[in-house]
Length: 190
Image (tube, rainbow, N blue to C red; front, side, top):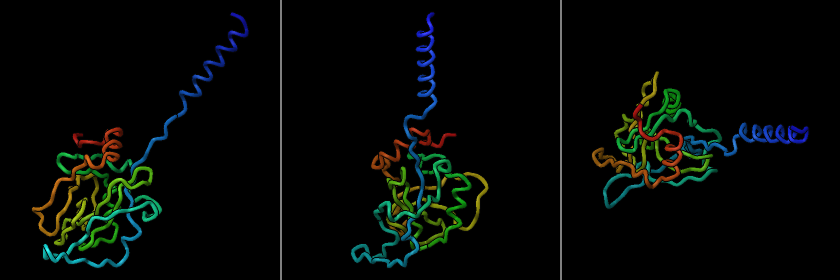
């Protein structure tokens, strides 16, 4: 074998290693952010047709309304079961939620984001609240810390009547489902 062929072979092997050792595609991250506006004073609108107050209604969010850092990072979101309406979060994640100042009337606004782009919004809602949201909720018990991961209810609320809660149609959130499927976090069958 000539010296030229050996040099070409070594160059090819080095080139092959340099590409195989590099991550070509950036891995996207999914995180849960709270909103800057969550700390503002909120007026509660009254629905004169339904004859009830509208607590925690649907809301839109943009990147600039998010707090600087995520409350919950990707590794703390363990799984989402779209059939049973459960989301499993690590103990660390749940304790972060519990450590926030809870609002029994208004919940705590959050946005699930992919690379800091909002793809799903809702409220962290205390299971001890007698008020009812009218939007997506992740229900938690704000009165006690946890020591292990917990599956929390995730649903669309329809006011103060608990029997009117609905399953969330997750097919309307394709980015969320795509990410959770790719990261093997759909279904909580572990």
